[in-house]
Amino acid sequence: MEEPSFPEENQLIVEEILKKYGLWEIHQEGLNRFSKSKNPEERWKIIEGLPSYKTSNLVRRYGEGEIPLESLPFLIERELNVSEEKAKEIAAELEKKLLIFIRPIKAGELPQKIPPEVKPKIPPKKDVYREPIE
Image (tube, rainbow, N blue to C red; front, side, top):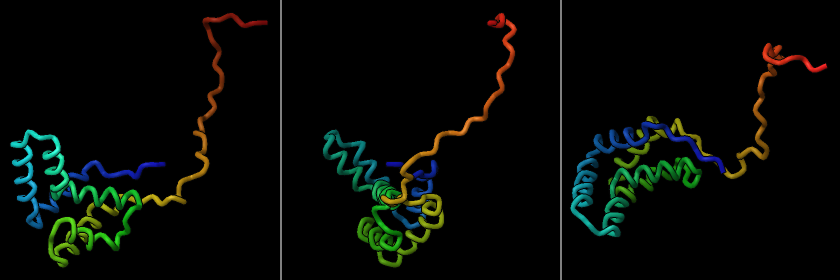
C-alpha cells in the first residue's frame, strides 16, 4: 500500500499550533517527566500522552484515510481534552496549514498497475575504442 506523503515541516506546524492554543506547556511538562523516568513502559505512556504525539497521530490517521476531516474536531476535543470551540479552531488551523498538503488514500484509489518509467531512447554512439565486427 502506498504511504501518504506528509510535509517535512509537519512537527514544526503541530508545535506552532500547540503553542498558540496553550498546549505546549503540557508537552514540556511531559518531556520533563520523560527525562526523569527510567522505566521504558512508563516512558512510552508519557510519550503517548504528549499533545504533539496525539495531534501527529490524528494527522497520520487522516492521511491514511482512517478518519474523515469532519471527525477531526471531535477527536481533537477528546484526545487533547480541550473545549469544543478550541478543538474546532485547532482543527481549522491544522486543515489550513497542514492537512491541505496531505491527500488521504482510500483503499480503492491505488493504481492496479504501475506504469513503467518511460526512458528516452539514446541513439547508439560509435565506440572509438572498439573495432567494428564484420
